[in-house]
Amino acid sequence: MRQGAIVVSNVGKMYRSRDGGRPTTLKGFLLSGHKSKKPEAYWGLRNISFAVPRGRAVGVIGLNGAGKSTLLRLIGGVGKPDEGSITVHGRIGALLDIGAGLTEDLTGRENVYLLGVIAGMLRSEISEQFDAIVGFAELEEHINAPVRTYSSGMKMRLAFAVAVHTRPEVLLIDEVLAVGDKAFQQKCFDRVEAIRQSGCTIFLVSHDISQIEELCDDALFLKDGHMVAYGPLKETLALYSSTIDAKVAATEHVPPPAPIPTDPGLVHGVNRYGSADMKIQSVQLQDGQGHAIDTLPSGSALQIVFGYERLTRVRNPIALIGIYGDDDVCRYETHSQIANISLSPEGWVQLKMDRLDLAPGNYHLTIGLFSSDWQTVYDYHAEVYPLKVTGIGPSKGALNPPIHWHVQS
Image (tube, rainbow, N blue to C red):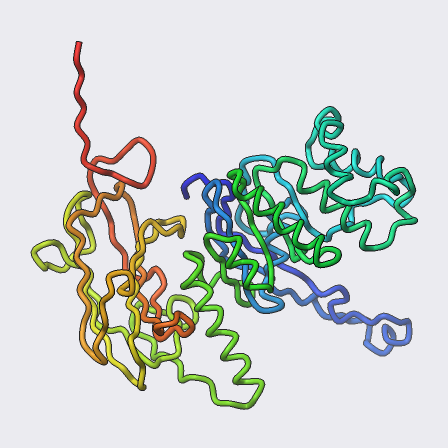
């Protein structure tokens, strides 16, 4: 997996029930025959792999219990995964359980230094930032009072102010952009945006989709502890929206959309999603002469051809094609709306690339059909179609453009 600011490789986190079915009283123990069940275990996260490039902002989405906060805490070093590994490059600023790290008997001033040192700052750095931290928290009149005398809002403002002034290279945020009143919330949001613009990598967990749309470049969609999708914001949010719609339909006893039949090589619920209003079929990768391939020399022409059928009445659907690396990071994506192309109710799509100047390596193509407003996923095949690119590549990077060296003495 390529190096990024955050690299998560095959991570799993297992939890066990606290009592494992054991009796909690002497009477219960005697009646049980001195037997107890083995502790039950479940995976809060399983088989999670992705890499966040430096300077990208990723929003983590999913329903309650999906594993979002668990993943964020593991990345922040709170606990260790039971499987796999997590690597973070750069100083971490973490906004997790805001206010939980404050020491009640210390003053606000002492807590600023304590939290700053825990975050990896030198005392000289904290002193340099001290006035800015206190001013941001709006606690000038209370900074020398014990934190136990602070209201909950004051504690949250102080903890947030320290975290966003640590000059982080990686900032982890867990549902804390709603700190304080509306004016302070806006100040928090503006500060995070400024940190993002400075080149900091941001990993944000939020149920507020508008925050993610405004702050993030990509989205990571978790469901029941598994990664459903990781990629460009618009299409990943569309997948999440379709999940929400299905849950609402089930709650209201409205029959959900029929599942898409599983094709060979596609595992429904892992690689394929959608409402089934349209269906992708007969996908083929071809070289410039129209021959079916799964291996291509770098710099050669590539054609992606697939058929589709409309199963219900839809208007102006969008066809999307993306190329992903082994690290699940999108290398290229385009869609028919960009080219102002309209799809007929049934037919086929051909996308031809005159040159595919990607570095040699293993890639997977994603194909999707969306509604014209991106709110509905009709059929989406996530990183299903393998493509191996061969040839002599660059020493580093994803691009492999034609180059010519000239040396003059």
